[in-house]
Every structure is written in structure tokens, then in C-alpha cells.
Length: 225
Image (cartoon, rainbow, N blue to C red):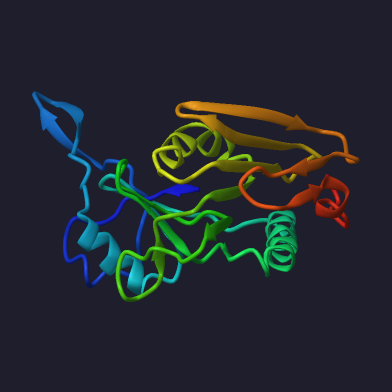
């Protein structure tokens, strides 16, 4: 993901041009010396973010006042997320579950985050934040395909935020550069079990849904570089 510096004036006029969010600096001259004076980074309200996102041509995360542009994905990223989505869609058709990919937004109220997980599963009916049906709040399973620029965030701060969702119980982290999947399953309050899966012959059994994921099927046709 790229961090962007959004302008502090006329939010509506620049909705389609959300820039990197680094604090800007301006130079002033003091006694013949030039000094850089950092300006306060603008923080955005939820309403401002949603207005900008509605007009933007690219997706952004919202992190408690910051707006973060999401970088485009590789072909491996796209294929892995798509394959998982397709497998889940077929297997969960009769399990009263909904499966969502990429473009569906997730709101996490406890940490004030809007994000776009690669794949989400909801049991029964999705709980929406409003009538647009673009944002849900109640996934039980989330999967992310890791990239070199976001893997630390996906395994750290983002996972911390996901765990604040009451009914969230399983997390899948999929490596696009090698055969490697991390499966986290909630076993009790504040307790999660990690299973490292590196063998292509491994099959992951999910606890919250009736689904088994064969890594050989997931990584079929994936070329590592």
C-alpha cells in the first residue's frame, strides 16, 4: 500500500486525486538559515473519507483519521484470491454463508478502520453499516494474500483490528511468492492457534465452516519467481 498526502483544502474538489499522506514541510528563513517546519498532518472524519471514497477511482483504507491508498495487486495475488473465492463459493453454497471478495468494505468500529479484505465469509445475513450495502461488519473468516509491502501490516496491526470483531474466528494469510499459508483459529477468548502450512500436500480444515482447503488446488497454476 502507498501512503498518500491529501490536500487540506476543498476536499470535494480533489476527491479523485487522493495523494500520499506524509506530513508536508515548508521552509522558512531564520537568521540566514533555512529550516524545515513540519505542518500538522490532516486527519479526516469518517464522513470526509466516505465522501472521498465514493468519488475516487482507486480504493483507500481509513485508519482512525488517516486515508491510505491501496496499491494494485500482482497477477499471483489476483489468481490466489480468485481461486479461494471460487472454491469457497462452491463449497459453502448450502451452508447459509455468504462469500465476498476484494471490493466489499469492512468497518471495524473498535479501531475505527475501514478496509477491503481480499476474501470474507459471513454466516447467515451480512450486517451493513447503511443502505448502500457496500460495507459489512460481521465476517467470521477473513483471508489476505500477502504482498511484500503489506505483509507486516496484515500480520500485525490489521490482525489486531480484525480480532476486535466479536464473531471473527479464523484468519488465513496466503503467501504469493512461495507455497506457504498461515491459518489462525480462535480457540477461546484472546487465544488463537497458528498452523503453519508449507507442504503443497497439506489440507487445511476450517473450524467455523465445513470446508477443507487443499494447498495443491489453491496454488495450482501459480508460478513463483
